[in-house]
Amino acid sequence: AAPPAPVAGMIAVMGGIVGSLCTVMAYFYALKHADASRVSIGALMEVVVGALIGIAFLGEPGTWNVLLGGAMILGGCVIVASENN
Image 1 (tube, rainbow, N blue to C red):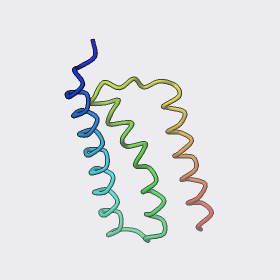
Image 2 (tube, rainbow, N blue to C red; image 1 turned 90 degrees about the vertical axis):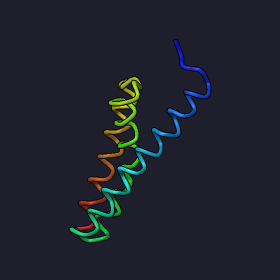
Image 3 (tube, rainbow, N blue to C red; image 1 turned 45 degrees about the horizontal axis):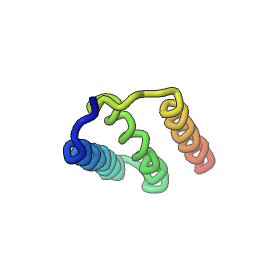
Image 4 (cartoon, rainbow, N blue to C red; image 1 turned 180 degrees about the vertical axis):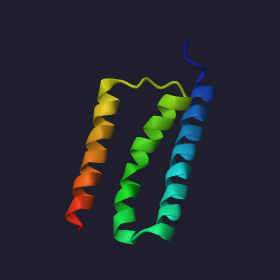
């Protein structure tokens, strides 16, 4: 059964905050250790991190569409990063 609406809303908000927080923390950590132009490409992975957190901790279904979308985002990041060399 689905959780009540207020609980579902809180889960969605907290999932967004945790996903964004993890990505921002990783971004600033990476800025200390790498070139900013390369690190900014990694910031595009916020959506992938959020989806993974939802799947791992919040019980979201990891469907083929979600996995394929994440792979496409990561592939795009790799292509852009390789063009910066």
